[in-house]
Picture 1 (cartoon, rainbow, N blue to C red):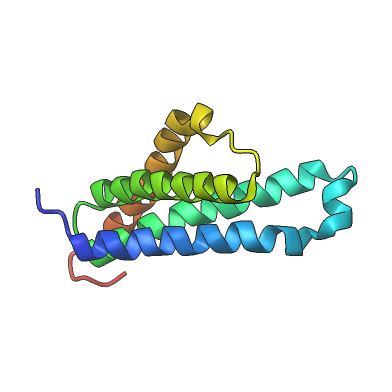
Picture 2 (cartoon, rainbow, N blue to C red):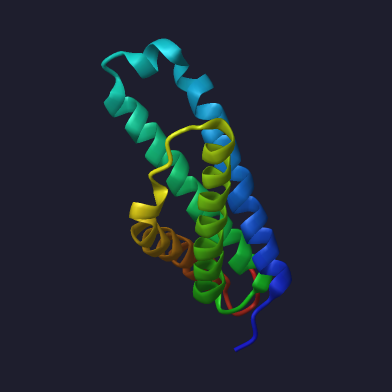
Length: 134
């Protein structure tokens, strides 16, 4: 099986970019008052939707760039992206003294994010018809 490194780099870059936007923009989207009020359900839903978009978009792009083995390319992007974002969060926690509880749930997120990206990659390769048109 041939792995397209350039496609993986695209997917991982998009994963990291959307993740950074997600954690940077979420407080701005909801506002400090909403985060401290009884709207925790809305906050959770928006947070999960942005996380889902991170996985689906990056896995889809990696598979489209690779143009083959979309499930594999998407899955690799999901696993590597999850490891890199956990590493970024750990470094941030060390530098700022913030709480970091990510290692306890890391196996869960590796499986979930890897599968979501792989699923998006599978969709991307299955959307291509025989003549190459979508």
